[in-house]
Length: 489
Image (cartoon, rainbow, N blue to C red):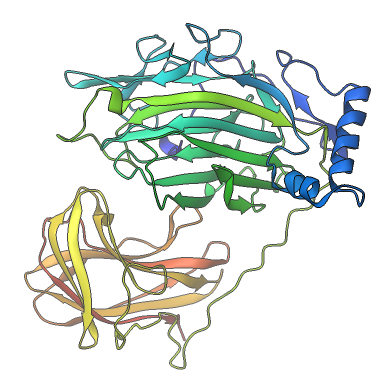
């Protein structure tokens, strides 16, 4: 569940417990909280090792070897599971959370410790958002200090809500959020997030660092709908890699993370993801990412998240003697004229919906279209939306090198006088601005706009050129040509 810096905080109504392993050890035995049943007796370890060895040995049959390879749980033992077979949420496993509206991300709901909003029924955990007049209530539960682990496979079978403004989440936070520092320095693992108005797409995200940085993968269903049927969401978390799965299919993996406190060196890798984490399940209503509910949003059974089971698996041991992979940046080269922007003169018509070169984006109730022709791009809006990025033209992979000076320039006009805000941003580094959002006053005649700025942040091979045309008091059509980003003389 994404958090904004302004609203980052500790998880209220929960005790904090230091849960980090000994970083000096090269190997750590699998660890759980005290409430978790002890596993890994010597005999069990030998039996597991023997079974695994047999499955892949030369003597094993081909079918046995294939089965061992394809079984996502091969090599794991079950630590804990909840199939929600009782008539209420098990107090020995789960905590209810209480938070006021707006606690994070400008969300509308109040989280209440009540079975009205998080309850067990028919073998499932149900988290049910409710609208009461102009107020919203929902449930949020976690396993902090009751069922947590360091490394393993964590999975759940879930059917998500459908409707504008809903954001269901299955995610993890450390038992001791303050050990490396408050969010995002403590780290966050989002196993599943699905927007209620886009229920064929699921996001798996890692948050960490200072400045806040994230790594994200997206899985999109070709058939089916995450709100119409149950799907299994999982991660496999190891000291040097975290992998994301939907229904057993891996769609994302990363080994690239860090954490630090401003003014200090980075903590030893694989921090912060080397401490006990617990599971959180909730449904948020409204806020920065999903936007707020509208007239189409229905608060009935379609608004609920249904959880069939949650399971934690672990291997007998993990080698923590891992080295952070060296990040190899691939800096885009300028063309023969010195321009880093591809097709900056719009000489070529291109697909504006893919991730190559120019891309036209609509969000937050923005409406419009873009087309290329006659060496210009024309952006026609019919709704300016609720955010400046609601109508947006972007190009990624801009090479930003610390200490260098750049000139960003373009020509533009509007069919009626209006404003537009260009910027050079960092999508992978908390959306910081290398060149800030700068309002330009467009007239009905072509004008040239040119800005020179120094790149003061760390090197980034994934900067982004942006033209933001939403929420600026106008939907007047904009024409842009001759976009350039080049090193200044």
